Length: 297
Image (cartoon, rainbow, N blue to C red; front, side, top):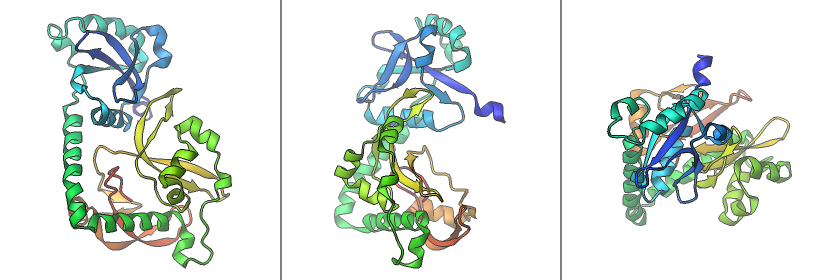
């Protein structure tokens, strides 16, 4: 199992208009893939994807959300530890992708599922806009989600407002956060996200530039702060998930009715007791799905 977790791929990308073959190094601000020459000497700059992780999913979700010409690019997986040996072979095959279709098939990334998912999300977002003018229920649900986030992150709040303290901003190393995540304090303050985060809530979706293996690329995520027992504060990113995972949450197992409610209404429809893993405290919680990230919260 440990071996599987370490398996990583790099993405070879072909510009279908020009025939140019490169390796993905991240995403540009316009959503197009950031590319570098497909040469072994550039291996340190290749963006690596954990084969069993969510980073690849997030990459393609952002690609299809932002890139104006997604059909212009074709993507092919190559094992990172074999890239130096396989790149020249893949480059030769991609000179005639139609003629070498069968040989390229094991490496070809089928992006149709990602594209369809993003189209469905964008269509749903457009439908929600007029509905919000007529019905404030989504706003109420979001307020409940925000309150629930605060309750779960701050056990003191369950005892009432007496003794409640927001996160101490002096404990936040902003320089480190900017270097690691590309997050700037001024941007969070201007958007109003900083106040929500200091009160144990989440930001809205923001652009972050996480650093994976020495390489940074852009993703959308909601952000929150987490405080440990010694008062140290760390940043927690909540990336957009490809799909909802409805098996259990904080040791609470969902019934069939629970899963149905979560899928259809976005919330459990009842309050359940969740155990704080760090303190052991039982916290009555309103469980819902974050509609912006698909994360259970």
